[in-house]
View 1 (spheres, rainbow, N blue to C red):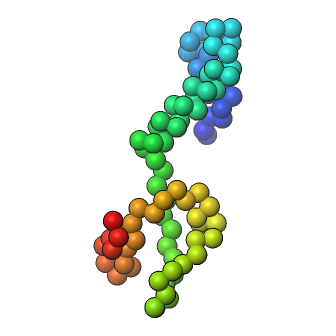
View 2 (cartoon, helix red, strand yellow):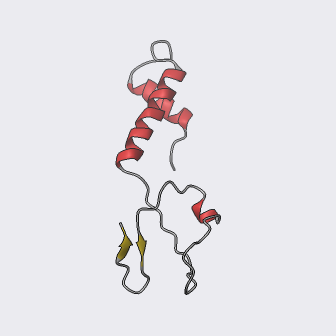
View 3 (cartoon, one colour):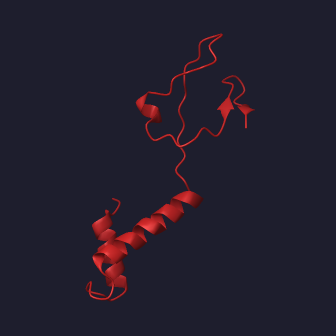
Length: 87
C-alpha cells in the first residue's frame, strides 16, 4: 500500500534522525511535494481512453469521467492500424 503524505514525512524525519525540531513537518511536506512533482514530470503515469467514433463526425466532447484528469492529448490513432494520425 502506498504511503500518504504524513507517513512520508515521518519516514523522512526518521531517515534524517530528526524529531521535527530541525526539519519541521511543513518543510518535509514541501520537500515531498517537490520530489513527487519532479518525479511525475520525468516519469508520468500514462492513461489511455478510447472513444467510439461516428463516421463523418470530426469533433467530440471530452466530458466523460475518463477525461477528468486529462492534461494533454499526445496522439490520435486510427483503430484499424493504431498508427498515429496526429503527432
